[in-house]
Image (tube, rainbow, N blue to C red; front, side, top):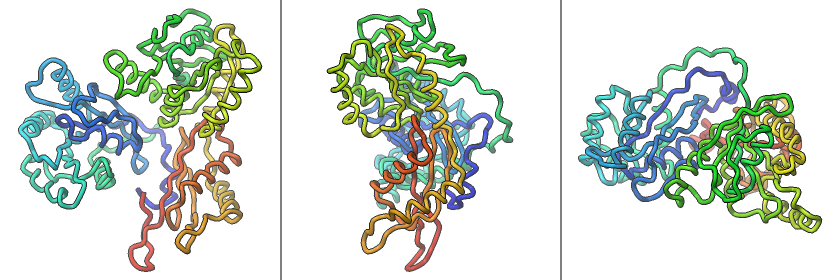
Length: 461
């Protein structure tokens, strides 16, 4: 990434169609691990057995201020049968719709007959192909990548998707292979804000959707798990139209689910990814469970604005409120910034508070702090509370910039790495000063990289 703070300020331009990068290869070469490395978070399902990824699954990605979509695919095999054939077709469709193809080979195994068959398929597509020699976890394995020149796809890129070796250079090459970005267009009228309605089974998601839409839009049943497919609904609340997606309840982690539940979990994850703000419903009459925590984590990791709605408030008595306050302090202490509302989808109590809560969260999600104000505040903060001394020296923050919004992303340019605790301190103080209620904040650190003893070089990401 460029080390010029001024360049970081231009991240949020309005772009035309986002280019597409398809990640393909035979089963179990580390495609989903590479996708997670590219998007910078653990979103794609990873398991050390072939066949975990079945569909084409798109994710938003960004590198050096350029946005693109990366598509994870299932393992491609020639002469596949039954479900494997369907997975292979999905991978071939991903290749046809991509602007650039990243072809992943396991360097610890070398080129196989399946890899060579895949090369023939890729040549027929006439798409630019970047050859990745994955699992090059050490220097010896990096040298093994030379043998992959035999595939005829040009220079192999030795990387370790698991450990990050070579991933920055690979991303630079992916950007170079993408088509030139279209001219910047003016921002047109915004459509309805997209709201994902999520929570574990039977917390009242469909009941809430029916209440705010004032009609039966979703099936309601006391049996948990009635909703499987996300249901889109345009709903008018407080004089504004919102696009709600009612999703299946998340019971298990995706890689522990099977059959219908597996696809329901993937579609729910997709609904969160496609939304701008998520309403996470919790049953206030029951304890905050591990399932509830998993849903909240999914929303936060997806970088979406967050409103927590404590449903079934009509069932909460005075004793339960005392215990609930303690639970909130204990179980939600990592997200004290979330907007909270107490509602009853059944009776309609306080449902009118939902739209103002959504607006507050979205306003924070899209808030930009002027660079001058940010650095003036940060200088005062670090002078009053400098970083603790480590190894006889204390790293200093030289400059900060907001690299983007939705969610707000900040970059700190420093003289050295910062303690995780100090980064949390900066985030807490940042929220106290500038708000951001209802939105996660991403803070990254770019330490100055020294080129030699006493030398000064560029920062690294």
